[in-house]
Image (cartoon, rainbow, N blue to C red; front, side, top):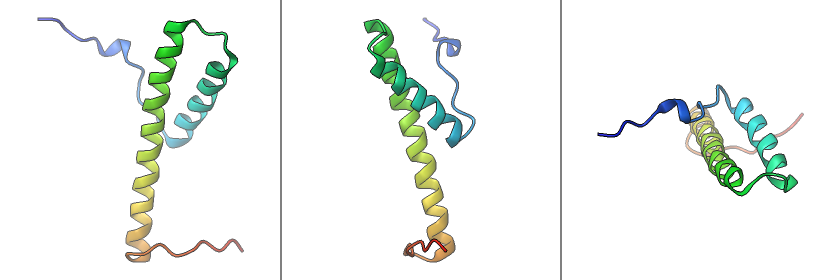
Length: 79
């Protein structure tokens, strides 16, 4: 029976901000065109994970706001 090592998987980000920062740095490296093909694939996969994490956090916050504001989001007025 083969074991999967969790050490090979990157850890989940500590926060939305940390995930966004890592994602921006990753995109810059991917766009540089200087990474070998295997690192491009790994980077793309990590980017997809980070994007999913960020979207999940944003959806959770939106859900909390809906609860606080009622069932419909109200427009945000910057004052």
